[in-house]
Length: 154
Image (cartoon, rainbow, N blue to C red):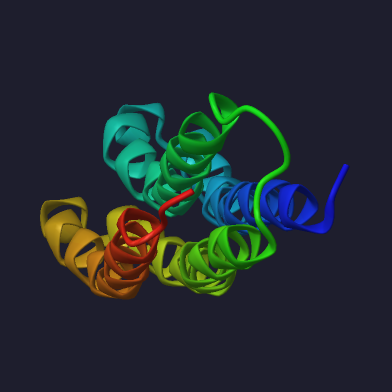
């Protein structure tokens, strides 16, 4: 395997692994708090589920970018040129790194939103809005990774 091919695969790994790790961690933060609330009042499951699921979107963004990159170079015959491989690697960084941190932080904000549901369930939308604000930065990173991906030619 030549260096360009290695970097291309590494770009896919960066996008998928980092954003996926962040999402798993963020969902677990919100999920632990939500489980406590649902233990006390099972009727709040639906409201807490939305907040718990929100940090999982970063993993989806990383997965989409990773799959797009993989499909772009998987049909290429021969070794991927070094420059193209580095471009794949660079394209994976925004969604991977921002996804890692924003998912964890969104999990913390979502957990606070679950606290809103616990005490004032009629105000649950406010918790979703707070958690959604963190999502903005994951979306921006996804867009940049997508633009970088679209600029790659092999």
